[in-house]
Amino acid sequence: MKIKEIIEIVNAKVLTEFCNEEKEFEYAFASDLMSDVLAYANDETLLITGLSNPQVIRTAEIMDISAVLFVRGKVPNSDIIDLAVENSLTILATDNIMFETCGLLYKNGMKGNRKWQTTY
Amino acid sequence: MANDLLKRFSFEITSNDFITAGKSSSYIKSNLKSLGIDSKVIRKIAIVFYEAEINLVIHSLGGKIYCDLYEDKIIIISKDIGPGIDNVELAMTEGYSTATDKVRELGFGAGMGLPNMKKYSDIFKIISDKNGTLIELTIFI
Image (tube, each protein chain N blue to C red):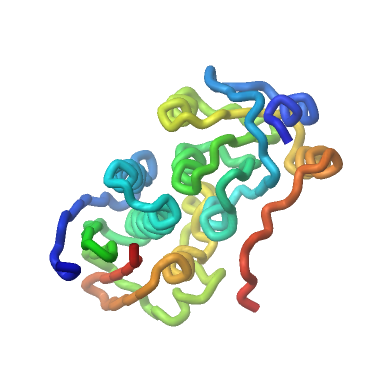
């Protein structure tokens, strides 16, 4: 799914100047826990989160995640946006809650990122 | 020689500094990229380094992290000044955490730190007592 489609589907705003609207994401990972993002997410994943602090950007950078979609109307402050820009990340924001955001994207073909091995 | 230390990066990590936490990991990642190391290896190193960094910020009184580069491997050493881990076996269990609510609000403290470090490294060693914790992580290039 292209970023421009994601923007349309969840009615998102682009908060960073740089946004490659043609960039495609096959998978998404939704979590407010950065520990879980570090444990489970793969690259080329759209990160969906309601957590708004610099560690979201650091985590995305470490995981080679190039776009973050903030939900529940969270607007990251300018320090977070600056850090994202510094790391060439695209930041999107939607007023939808996490459940609706995921549901809308899933309905339109986005897949969940589940390439990990369970330990139980 | 494979056992010769080619380069050492060292970083001072401050307890409770959540603003700059992750900066050292970012620095390591871009430096290893410029050295032409395979991107999959870099990703593993970046993850374990970041987990180590976050762990020191959350749980320790401060410490140092070293990233030692050899011809065939990278060793990350995390060394803090206390207070140590009460039960290392429990701390290695996925989901077990002693993190505070404040830390959880920041998106950490899910009890995945040490298990994640083990998962992404080829050799994982940990020693802890009240004077501090020493973690040594080896990733083969």
